[in-house]
Length: 397
Ligand SMILES: [Zn+2]
Image 1 (cartoon, helix red, strand yellow):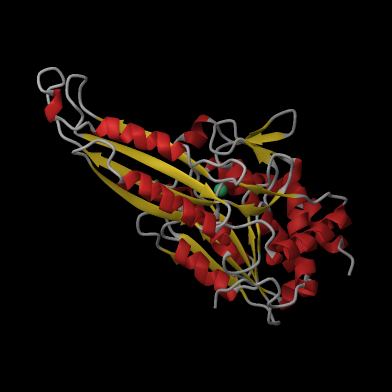
Image 2: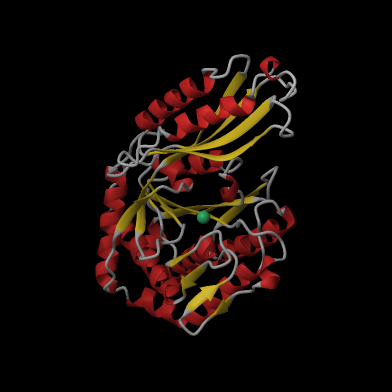
C-alpha cells in the first residue's frame, strides 16, 4: 500500500502539530505539582478520546493521574505506546521561558525534548492512521500508557506499565531520540542505595579516644565503593551525596551517603550489589555501626535482545521509505523501557531529536517532530503487516 495518504496528512498538519506541542510545553507538569500534571492529563485524554480510545484516568496517589487507553482493532495484534508527561521543572517554568523556535530551527521550552515532543508525535501518527483508515488501524489494538511520575522513577505507574506490557505484543517508548537521532536499544539497570553509619560522639580535643567517627568510617567505604566501578564492563558505582557530623570539634556520630549503581546485566548488577553490601556492612572504625539498604529501581535492558532487534529492523524498513538512516545506541540512563523490555519486545527513543534533557538548555530540532511522526506512522503500518505474534518475547505472562 502506498504511504502517501499517511504522509500527506501529516505534512498538512505540520503547523497545527507544532502548535499542539507548544500548548503541551506551555502547561507546566513538574512531577510534584499534581494540579499542573492533571491539566496536561486532561489535554492528552481529550486527544486520545478523539482518536477513538477508551481512556481511564488512574489516580497516581502521590502524583498526578496516569492515563491508560485502548483503541480496539479487529485483529489479534496489540501494540503499546508508553510515554510520560511529567517533567523535572516546577510550576512557573513555562512562564519564565515559554515555548519558542529560534532561527536555527530549534524549539525550546520545559519538557519539549523529555518528552512532550514524543507525545505530540505519537498522537498525530495515530490520527493519520485513523483518518486514512489504514488496514493497520482497522486491525491493530493500540494501547497507551501516559504516566505522570516517570521523573521520580515511575513508583506508582510501574505496575500499570508492566500489566499493559504483558498484554501487548510489542512496545514503543516515546522518550526522545539521542542527539544524533539514534533510537535506544538498551539501557543499563539502575539502583539507588543508602548507607548510614552510626558512630559515637566525643570531644575532639579532650577525649578523642572515646569517640567513633562515623565520617572516617564512611570515607573508607566511599573509597572502596568507587573502586568497584569498572568502565570496561559498564558497571559504575557513584556516591552522589554525603552528609555527616555537626561541628569540627566533635567526633562525628553520624554519616550518610546515597549511592547510584548502573550495570548492563542482572548478573552483573547482583554481583556489584553483593560487593557493595560487603563493603558497607564491614565496620572499618571500631565502635561504628553501618546500615545498608536499597535495590534496583530499573532492571537492566541488555543489548542484543532479539525482540528489540526485530523492532529495529521494522523501523529500518520505515526509514528506507523516508530516506532516514536508522541507528540505535545503548545508554546508561533508565526509562520505562527498562521495565517493558523485561516483558515484551521494546524499542525506545521514538521521539524527536534534540539534547540537554533536564536542563534549561533543553531543545528539539523542530523539523524532526514531523520526521519522527512519519517514522512512527510507517513503523506501525509495517509492524501490523510484518510482526509475528510471540517473536522476540522473553518472558512475562
Ligand atoms: Zn523522559
